[in-house]
Image 1: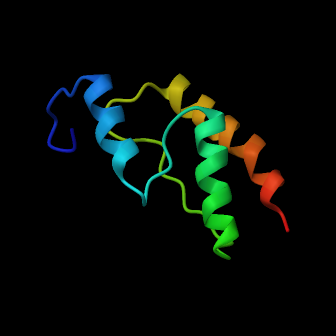
Image 2 (image 1 turned 90 degrees about the vertical axis):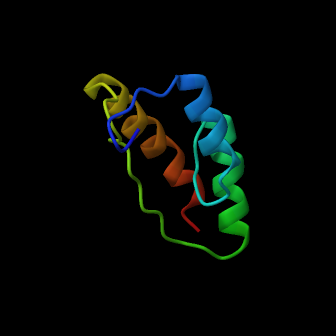
Image 3 (image 1 turned 90 degrees about the horizontal axis):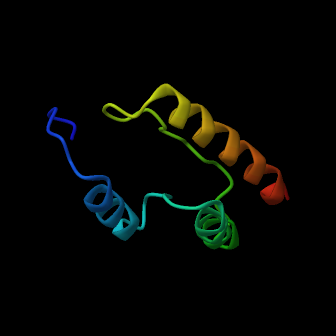
Length: 75
């Protein structure tokens, strides 16, 4: 994908979900992963939303959704 190849969304999701260093998925999945990191004492998050040819609307949605989750972890 980073080299400009088209990657089916299902394949991309499967690969990214398996990476423990990435938080990808539904709001509930992201909440669970964020909780795991918070329980370890991690208190910083760096987000990369724009990858490849993801449409601007999808990026905006992703930013809004993570913004809704972050206050839950303000300890």
